[in-house]
Length: 166
Image (cartoon, rainbow, N blue to C red; front, top):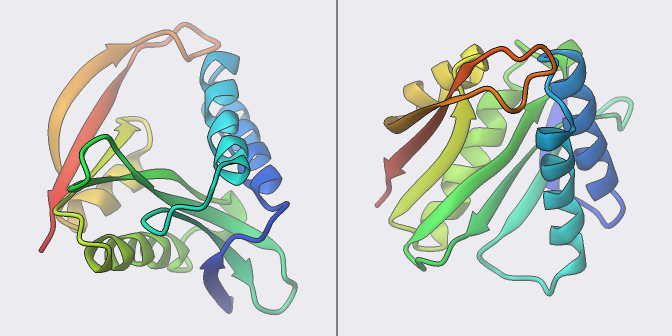
C-alpha cells in the first residue's frame, strides 16, 4: 500500500476524533469516559490559534485518498517537553509501515522544534504501540492500574513513557 504522511487539513480533525471513538470502543471495548476525552483533543486543536511547535498529521492512502491513521505533537507547560498524542493506525492498514512513519514524523518535528524530551501515555493492552515506542527508544517511567475505561470493567495498566531527544 502506498501512503503518505501529511499535516491534517481543516475538517479532518473530525476523522481523527471519530477514528479514536470507533477504534477504542470497537477493538478495545473502552467506554465514553475515554472516547469522549480522546475525541475532544483534535476538535479543540483545530479551534485554537496555530502553534508552530504543534502539529497533527494524518496517513493517507495515495491511491484512494482514504485516511488511515493519525498522530499529534503537542506542547506542554514545560517548553522543553513535547507530547505525542492521538497515535492510531486503522486496523486494515496495520503492518504496512504507517505506524513507524507516523512516529518518525513526530520525532523529526520534535527534534526540529528543539524539544529535549517527548512524553506519551498508552496502555499495556495496546501491545503493538508499546512495542513500537520501545523500539523507538521510549522508556516506561510510570504505570498505574486503570479500570475506568473498560465497558467490561477490566483492569489494565496505563503507561507513561518518555524519550530524551537531542
